[in-house]
Image (tube, rainbow, N blue to C red; front, side):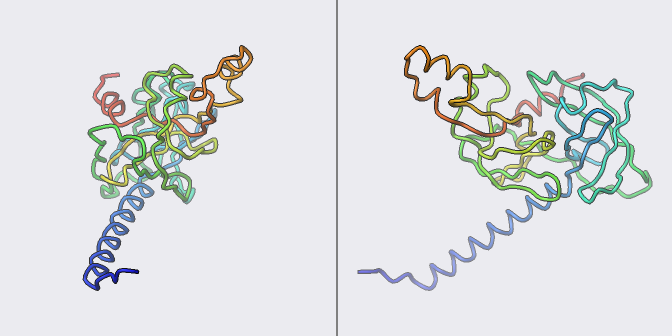
Length: 235
């Protein structure tokens, strides 16, 4: 026998859903408005406006350039925002981050962005996140599967998305849908499974490591605590 759901309960549920949707829209709008494209003669990727004068991106987008190089910064409509120079770059293999200084097209324009808050703690597997890039974005989740970390032996890249992003998304911001803060910066795609060398060697030896050989596809990102540490560092 079905129980009747009370009208007040339905009303409260609708209010909760409406509030949740409004919060989600606010996070995604803020994320998209801060997203830029970073272009140089050697590469291109994405970045995010930390504030009106600084852009955070992935180190491998810019680390083959000298610090005097100027990068072209475009908004998501392809409009020229200004030029940027490199303030500091971390090692792409340990903390794939770079900080750029923006020289806007029109310095007299009023300030648009407040300082973007970085999440105080790294998000955990299953947390909803929003990745902003191009003229779109994707709501996904932090991966519950940490197998690829063990296979790569990576120290800093402790979190990945469940989505597998194409080339050029590097440097995009990853935002917590719960708190609206910056949870990460997209670094690289990851995959493990039957195509992984470690897994193939294991199978060839007749050993069974089901967990290590489980297929995984996702995209690694530099988490919030690593971002905060990088921003605090002198160089």
